Amino acid sequence: MWVYEKRLQYPVNITKTCPKTAQLIISQYGGPDGELAASLRYLSQRYTMPDKRVGGLLTDIGTEELAHMEIICAMVYQLTKNLTPEEAKTAGFDAYYIDHTAGIWPQAAAGIPFTAKEFQSKGDAITDLTENLAAEQKARTVYDNLLRVITDPEVRDPLKFLRAREVVHFQRFGEALERTKDSLDAKNFYYTNPEFDKGILS
Image (cartoon, rainbow, N blue to C red; front, side, top):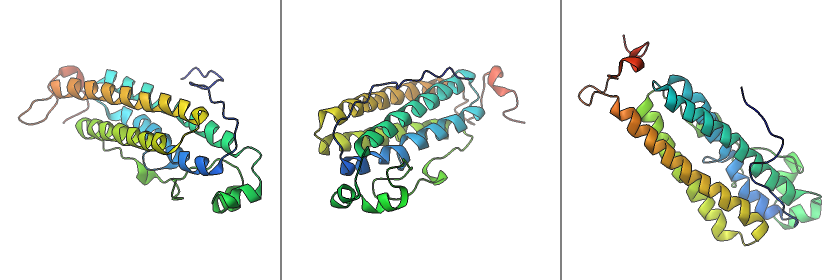
């Protein structure tokens, strides 16, 4: 189904251990607006999209979000590599360390674990695409917040790349929403394009 290249979509080369920064960045792995939720959201929603080109877009972006998840995990790994218990305690990373040592585990920056409640799949094209627009903006805001508090250029560089991709995804979902709305009857919100009607409405 996919061709997997064994390299990150964007390079991560962090040389300084900093568990406090890792604790912040991990939110974009398992937090409410993170890459794991985004990937699951889009790869779930694609099946019920009446326009197969929009479904293909969801597949593409959902797959890219998996690549972004890899980038975040690589960042957390490099920020906690060779972490000592003393460093974990000093940085306030000790609770995570007790549960996971330096293993990568999906949670928000506040320590709340990831659940399927972090994303939605309604089976209605307008609802799902509108949610996706909001999701991309929320993720962009999280990256903005990370960039406001993180000063290390080795960490900021991949974060800037990831933020830029959120903007592009927002634009693509906007185009997909307009394309989908163009195929609807405004009066009754039914799909009017015959190629979309098969199996959609009885």
